[in-house]
Length: 271
Ligand code: FPP
Ligand code: MG
Image (spheres, rainbow, N blue to C red):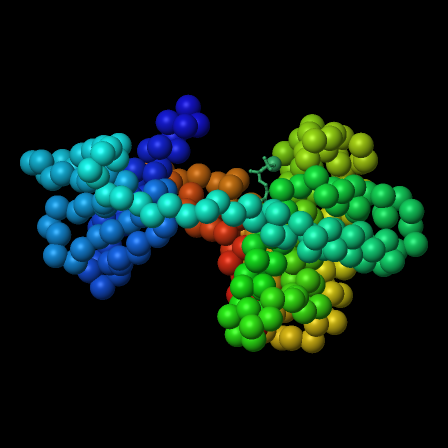
């Protein structure tokens, strides 16, 4: 069911791409089979090549056809596979260590220390700090020919992981979860009241880290991501009447709940 729903969403997303006005059309040749989109301005019958996907107009009905690339179809350059975790492994160890230290040194309550550090055991996927670290190193290299990280870049990686984890702490209470990151979820061990306050405490420590960075643009960008997270979660409680409204609601909810923190952390990193 989930895969049926997601393939329908993919079709709708591709369809939406094909309906964009011509000024928004783009030619983006990427290096992998998954992300190769080529669309030309002049095409009346939209074609996304590289994936072998096209739409045909037939008496007002649009159908999507796909064709697996075979011999003689678009050739996709082969690139060496790079493991982003291998590139950031040492940096992520520092990020996880420093997060724990920040939480521990900001309270003398041993119980609050235990609850607030419970999910920071290095077992999460760490996608958000990883992309901040990768972007930081890439920009440092591009702008200064140095790839070393600055303290504020490490702080940004910490902030994004802490906000994400605090939102999961609250989410686990909302969803009455049982399991997270390979162990019993936080609400299965401590009371809802304590867990909610531990989530708040993580956000309070994030506020201190941001305040110490003394950069108003960064603070306001991250505040926007926080506001989006809460609104995205709130939107999830509602629904819409028509399919079109539901799809628009789904896209906005997903941007706010997931994409905004990633985008705004990367934006902050560049400030
Ligand atoms: C996981 O969703 C939840 C989120 C990505 C965001 C949750 C946001 C809040 C609870 C708002 C409060 C925010 C802060 C910063 C305190 P899911 O339930 O779909 O995923 P899951 O299966 O991992 O639980
Ligand atoms: Mg959940």
